[in-house]
Length: 426
Ligand code: PGA
Ligand code: ZN
Image (cartoon, rainbow, N blue to C red; front, side, top):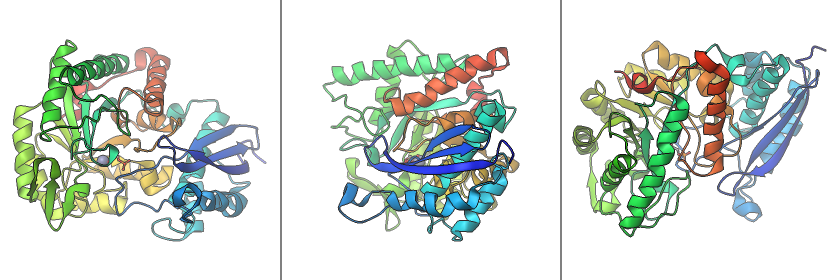
């Protein structure tokens, strides 16, 4: 047996950053290389994502247990992949897809499948004696971090209607300096909120989640104040990015902004974003409209797509078929890449490539439910995406990815490149 043949695959139920169960996979190769992968989990999930299998038995972990997915790894996947070559990621992933046999990984669960796919990549990299980012590609570009410093929507209680207000440190010279900028602004934002008598507790992704906001625009003002207070120039040193997660606001053809007691149609939402981009240094808006509002997306892209990045998250769910429809219909100009939306490493790479062929940028992303697993940091560099979204400047499940990227930047030494504003060039 070759050193990279899969010798054993075990799975475990662990907890994610919200204290809910998720899947961990421990994989060992014949040559002794080992790897563990932990699967993330979303809250504002897209309807078209691959299926996250939960036990649903009502009592254990409030129905959120993942023992079925764990059993699927150990009883169905493990015997099928044993002896197969972990360094042939495409064949492993194809086998996982065939074993499941459904279009959305509903039988074995995308959480079971992804755990094995990720662990396989990590173990093969370990066997080759190279870090995962180098095993995956030749990239030496650190990603611009989109740092979610103010959490709303489904990731917080009683904060903004819109889900994410992010810092984009476009003027930093290096990744480590981008992180320093983010941290200093994050702490300045805490002071700004405190001075206004607003609460400084954090939401699911480690960003502040103040109650008592009057509008969904107010966080933009608060963050601009914090950028200046930390000694940076808004727009030049640090720009802004948004993820309204508009699918969560959408019902009956309209988008409800509960905090402002009004609802808007897709055209009025586009007008609102257009106005904001004139007043604030916004370089990227993700899920500005809902996952199946293709006509709205077309109008949004025609209106703003030449000036700013428009990212499809729930719209595309890292799925090549949906990305190709978006390209055909001129919807969005960038893709969010979440490995658990599609369920394998190979399909995530295919999604990035499908976008790249049409000039769509890719942003590698965490989920709101995360673990200490840092694989996405290596993916961002190895797959050369130039952008990552992995939360705020607090909470170690977020910081672990930033720490890993700073380590990669040091390892790359003088070869390391930080794209800054060029990552958003249109
Ligand atoms: P989720 O949110 O992980 O809760 O789906 C993240 C996002 O919408 O980008
Ligand atoms: Zn999103």
